[in-house]
Amino acid sequence: MTTSNTSKENADLAIKTIVEQVQSGDVHAYTEIIRSFQKQIYIYCYYLLGNKEEAEDAAQDIFIKGLENIRNFSYTVSFSAWLYKIAHHHCMDLLKKKIKSYKFWTSFKKERAHESHRQAYEYDDFIHELLEKLNVDEKRILLLRSIEEYSFDEIASIMELKPTTVRKKYERLRKKLLKEKKLGGEIYEHSLKTGG
Image (cartoon, rainbow, N blue to C red; front, side):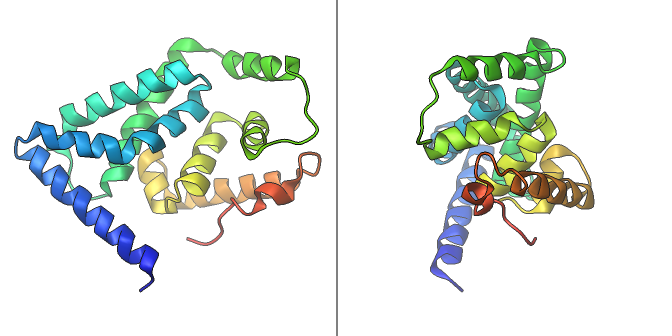
C-alpha cells in the first residue's frame, strides 16, 4: 500500500470519527469537517457559479445544510461525496434561480473577452478558458473527476446518474478537450484521468 493511500485512509477514518461525534450531538466537532472540506467546496462552487462572493456564500450555506442533515448521513457513499451532493444541488438551485439559457456563462465569457490578452497564461487562466467551452454537466463531471479525483461511481451518486452514463460523458468530454489545439490540449491532458 502506498503512503498516499495510507494517508487517505487515515484522513477518511478521522472524518468518520468526527462525523460520528457530530451525529452523537457534539456540534463543535463539525468545525473540523468545515476545516477539512472548506477549500475544496469553495473551489467547486466558484467554478460552477463563477463569482467569488457567491461561492463563499454558497459554501457557508452548504456547510449549514450538511450540519442540519448530518444525522441522516450513512456510509453508503463517502462523507465527502455526500457533502459534494449537497453542494451540487445547492449550486444548481442557485444557477436555476439566477440564469436562463446559461446567460450567466455568456456574460462571464464577455467579461473575460474584455480583459487584456496576455501572452503567457497561468494555469488558472487555462481552467477558465477550458470551462467556458463546456456545458454545466460537463463542468461538473470534469471538476469532480479531474480536480477532486472522484470515481465514476461517486460522481454518479453525486449527480444522480448511472456510473456508465458518467463514464460515457467523461470519455466524450475527454476527447472533446484533447482536440482543443488552440489553447494547448497538452496542458490539461495531465488533468484528464483515465481508468475507474
